[in-house]
Image (cartoon, rainbow, N blue to C red):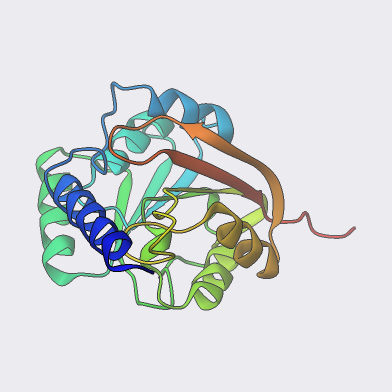
Length: 209
């Protein structure tokens, strides 16, 4: 790489990092175009049990709780103690009785075995430090035939996998290696910001009769 191209790449990295820090694209807008897409790919209905892995501020958790209704349930997971505390406070204030907050670990979602009909990882997968172990815990948590949606962003071509994203093919390879069936990859997932989003959809195989 020449000095000029290195400087150009450095400037682009700085711009991306600055843009991401001031950008609301990683937040979730329940009234935006993403929730209808999520309802469609996961076939979300009242009474279902779903999980929001890496819930952050809990906007998606709240939207999921409203979708599945009082007869359904949402598991909302986080790792950071401060985020867990804030998440519990927010959910208590919203009086959402159909949500359970779960403390996750770096290699384990913390979800109970066979608890969920569907699981969502939204802008979370690129942060995983041990994808194989985490994916194994997600597989355990799903019921046979349950769905997993991984929503993320591809990294800039000169950076590679890391805090700015993960290639869609890496997600497909890692998740299928953990025992999931690949269903579809949507590269036109809605979202605001400097990078396009994608949604990779997987299914836990049905038990053999």
